[in-house]
Length: 536
Image (cartoon, rainbow, N blue to C red):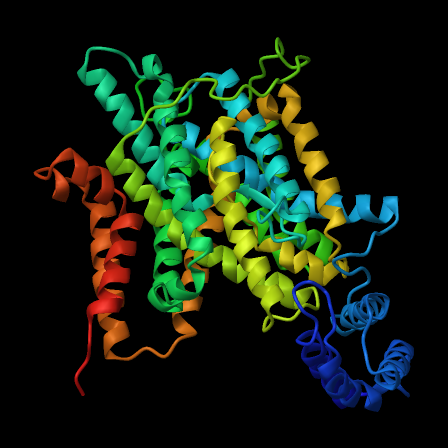
């Protein structure tokens, strides 16, 4: 096919998908229209020729029985896979080694993103115990495996039934650190210590579980929510996430909170710390500039490896505790217990609502890449199931002592690169994550990662998150109203981040909700976008 024929073929495939019901059945009354779409391509594509022949046979019978409907749907699926440029479609089962190789590539793209949030949260809560940090990393991997399986398999109404990979979400890092510090400050005020309340982890996990129903409810309301949480609001929130987390990345680059105290071997912002973080940052940028897609995909992993080697051999920053490396991690639900705080739950609920909009966008992109229609009822079933799974999985993660999960957008890019959209590959990814989570050696090794190594990688990641938010905002027409919404949201959100004392005279319940710049800016963006009316 030439370029024009390929474009017409893709348009035909998209239109053809609209005639397949959510239950996979074909309506006889629509077969005439389907035949008109397919017949021009019968001479160009063998599957189209078979479909045209099958449709003509159905038209002659005057009815579509169950077997014919199934055969027609299978032919349409095969044509959709070809139209999307895929090697394996959603329901295809690749050979074992092909599926394993594709799963390994996905694992390479998501591994660092999964382990980074628990390490950053542990750093923000000043957790120095390597066993606690290692366990948090292990449970993040374990929970991601469970959640990925649910998304790909769909259990009842829960799951998108696509190749959607779940992992710990960056969006919650700032608010969760704030919640943990609240618990620690209460313990200190009562004359206790931070570790007496398990560093605030019970309150974090309890609030994550209690706020998750907000996203579950959003799954059934996402059509209406899209009129309230518009691309402008989503872009503002995503930008605030990145901008708020840049401070976390910069602190890690300087050596983390542990380097700020007296007597630190490598004081905050010393040249050794900055050298390590700079080596990581430059390595990631260098590999991202490569024309080789595999080098680009592994750029963060390579950057961390270089930084780790510089920190270990150059400055002796890495110290291992080998005592528990050969143990076996048994997931223990509610290992540290749970506690709740109403104000913190409300604040997290806002973040969950924004996450639901992001999840629906990722599922839409995944559907398009995978050759599925985004116009039929099946699309709405996928989005509803995927967003519902996002909420359910975040609650499940909280039960297993981990943090909220979300769908990773980077895996959509890998589907395009590899041409493998099979959801069965997700089972391999889930199994790998589960196995990695069960062995303490993985968590312990990464929990020894010096803060500057982590900071060099996350500084770029968070900058890209902020850039993604700005790109979403820029994709919309920006008039007077939009300018006002942007000014109010950024002013309020960044104002709270830069000057937290602005809330010191407010009640604790208000501080619990508005203490996060992300929550404050997000709420202001939602309310101002709804209420502001411009009179020309």
